[in-house]
Image 1 (cartoon, one colour):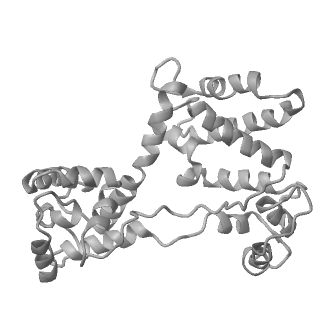
Image 2 (tube, one colour):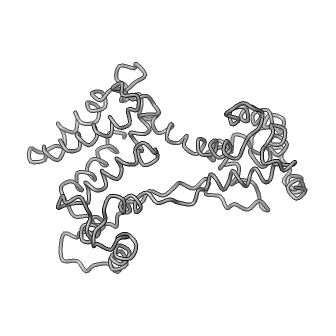
Image 3 (cartoon, one colour):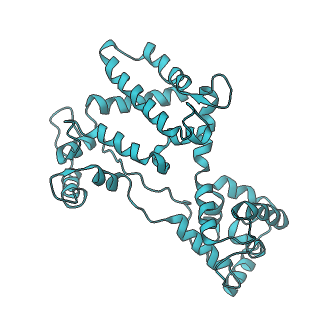
Length: 318
């Protein structure tokens, strides 16, 4: 299954490199993932807050099976981890950092799923040769035609460059955190420059280092035959002229591409940290003690014993 998915991804990237037509609208913008799909309405329940704080619906469901005392005990242990400087107080910054950490655990889980099949010698690291052999050896035998050797070579070059960028300590191997950055570069600050480079390489067909409006549109829609253009293409051309091309020179340079694909979205983690602190900070000193957090355990994690009526009563008190 994993090999099939990888083959599909490679086929899609190969289509970009070879300029093959695309039949569907493509979105290259990397938006921040929502903290939860639940509505954020504390008058109804704290489900959104639970998933935001714990990082996943599954983790929140685990706490729902606990008694109130078990829930408080586990939350207290978490507070010790959230308190990064171990001064006994949780600041807004520490709370925000924790939420961001919890929300990115899916990256670690995804890396875990692929880890064993790539760490061939089971030494706890993945070398470039291990990754290349697993990813490309079977493809070269089963799926590569002779006239496609060069595009596949380009894919290998791109992957190797990404591998080296993800290898932060430059030891020639990736640990799990580095492997996560390799698999999902748009989620890691140190990889974002490479995301911009890869995007420009895909779209800049004439190789002039910039993206004109036709290259921009061609990346989204490039029919094989004489199909009638969809209406949204005119809207995208307007988007390019009015918003993408900020200096109005008819092209997008590297900075303009960065603003397009990596926008500065609303910081959901920062907003949630402010919300949790405001609701829990009983003495209004701008910081949370372990007792303040545990006392509001129903807001942070919940449990099967939580009576929501009582929770709302305490919510209204503050």
